[in-house]
Image (cartoon, rainbow, N blue to C red; front, side):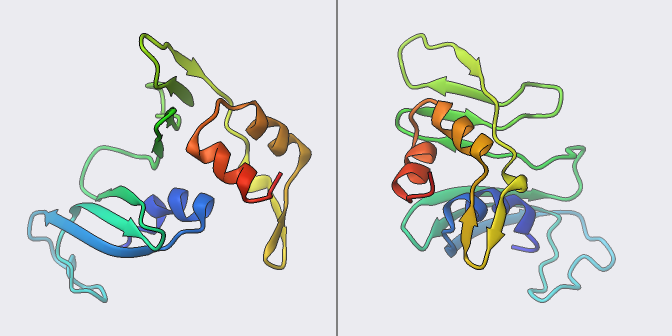
Length: 149
């Protein structure tokens, strides 16, 4: 897969897991210079399923020649799903895994404001409060069990 770094930043940045295996399909018109990369990958549209070093799976798409102009994440868990904002379509949204549960708008903390010192992150109080206010999910459990709060 050619240049999936922006798409994988959500997974790697939050979980610190690394991609261990990739299964990828590609498509795209023949375009001058498209295969000029370290992997000789000629595809402009790529869809993959990946496995992390911890055995979790993620789906990653890189579509260079489409009208989409964004990167976003969707976190699917057994207790619910967290949808990252999708331009003007919907805000950051939580959907609990309960019968007839309504979609609920949530505020995602500004993780980019986190200050890091050496390899240990110093978490701002506002970020901690925002994470604690989110509904239970695998994402919030990860933060809590990782002794980051």
